[in-house]
Image (tube, rainbow, N blue to C red; front, top):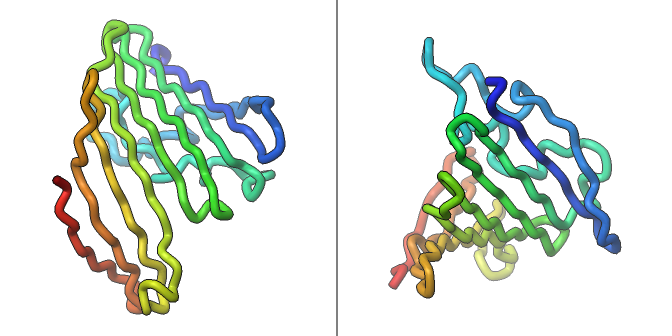
Length: 162
């Protein structure tokens, strides 16, 4: 685990200054999900699915987050860049994975909470779009609406992604 480091920083609304957050591997990753003998790597599962959940103080004022997870021994880096708007109900995530300094995966994910007036649902509906960026091409991988149901379950409506 000594070969992995995390560089976590964020910006607040009305500021151009990056604030650094110290975070340990144990705080970031869910180590309980590793199989016995499995080594931690940059793609191991985090504790939270949204990076905003790692910030305690000033969370409501965060509008950008940048995280680099670096494995020096394997020469791999996983980069996440979040931008929030609409009181953090909506966000864009850019995910870039590099191996040996070469980009091998570049994805953009947009999540928006649909207004309840538009969805006629008492629980939130989320429109999610995932795009894969390769050289001079961007392809839609997924477009759907995920509905939180009152019983705690979720439903999904797929929208054609091409």
